[in-house]
Image 1 (cartoon, helix red, strand yellow):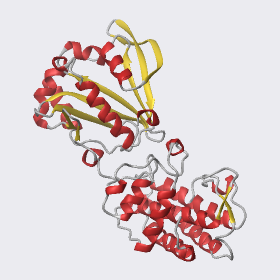
Image 2 (cartoon, rainbow, N blue to C red):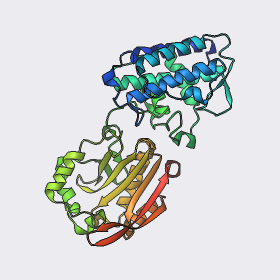
Image 3 (cartoon, rainbow, N blue to C red):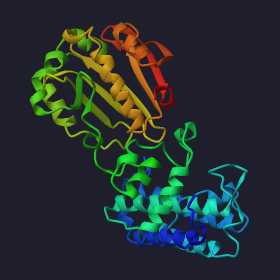
Image 4 (cartoon, rainbow, N blue to C red):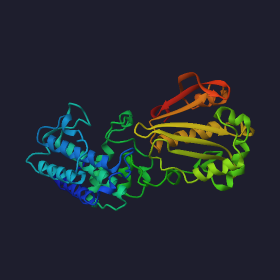
Length: 385
């Protein structure tokens, strides 16, 4: 927690005022914009921020039960509601003895109270981060003083890590790797609390290429059409993909679509990554990540490799590197794979990655005239790290 308790309320008020300035710029046309808060529009974010202000204000005056923290459905004026709630919390925090008063914060614990100085510290860092969220959504810069950021960093470093951060209801997402070495205090705060400072930059530019001892993993380019066609055109490769082999023209269409990466924000977003040997520019296969459920951070992983490069451990090496990035940087809570029960190579790969078999669907797909069955393998983030 910030060591300068005497100045904590002034710094918190600075954070609230900064949030009011940026929220005041929101128009009705902006409310459906995406935000760094996965699966939330700007309207959703403002509703959450308003509920937070009302909840903290209630807690500061001896209330703050769960009902005080619930967002109110469809505020007719989301901006006005937030600005009013912010004024309300400033008034509540100005009361005598607020830093010594017990606060009930249901997001932290359902019935255990926190001393006011700790609660105000959480409020401060929450509004630094959410002010940045709104600014990024609008595409406008936000500025914070050095003392405010220094205080927020101390709080961010004190937020507990572990499985609780994996819950969709957690106040903060898991830490994004790289906080210790990034260039600014604000960036470090954001990473510690589960934000990428590069949002909304595509994960393709923020993360790739990945490198292992023998491989380079990055986006496909138009120069990769022939190499992709070399394996995607093979019947034995297409067999377990439940589709015909790709033509060269189809490979060109696919690469044109996937070569810019993905925003990695909405259900169904895909990242298709070329796997290349370190000593050669041509792809020998690909790893696919699909954001199956953005809110619950469920990510599907798949792979396709040229049979000529089988038996050398390339698929396991590449899949392990991408799985680590999916969990550590893209924020996956659960990684899963769906595969044909006859696909022995993929079964072995899943097991070598440490994934467990969670489901067996019997004759759940019609492959031409033949019924096929499917396994689902999966692992949670904490089991892969």
